[in-house]
Image 1 (cartoon, rainbow, N blue to C red):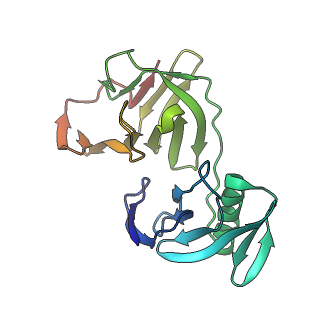
Image 2: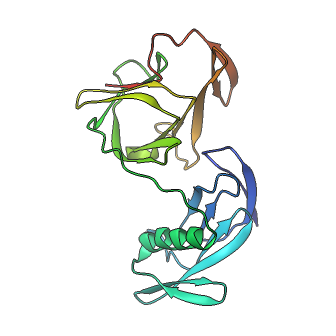
Length: 223
């Protein structure tokens, strides 16, 4: 069965042959774009690792030993379960000369309500979004929250980071990915904010709309 995917980072569409466990690297931006795994329900191996629609390696296991089968060679992995898949992806990227380093910004803000360019997600201060990790690769700041929520901030500038609030004054684009409360699905819904010239647009599944001037509101406010 063919599964159609879309990279959450650059919106590139591509297709893979679906199986119980697989990870996909975007063929365009080369970021880790997708993971489908039976973890918690069954074994996590074998797990194919795709670059676009091409299989670049397979993670296999025997008892507690995990290895990456790549180009008819077996590389023993130091980690197990889902960590082994992440380790294997790093090896595949290195073999393919894909180098995209990143760092954790160690945000002091642990969570709060979210507001984008003065546009609140939900009612002001009604929702609490707990930060679980961050990753910044020099272009995209990714903030991951509890309940599988993600915020992608493209080219962030002017970051104020305190225990009370997080402010990001400017960004070329924002993408908020979330799963609606009370809905039984693993498929994200997304809201995108992007500046086109001096005009701010908000795009959802219902279409694209013009927003009032973003000034002087910060691109991201959490508090």
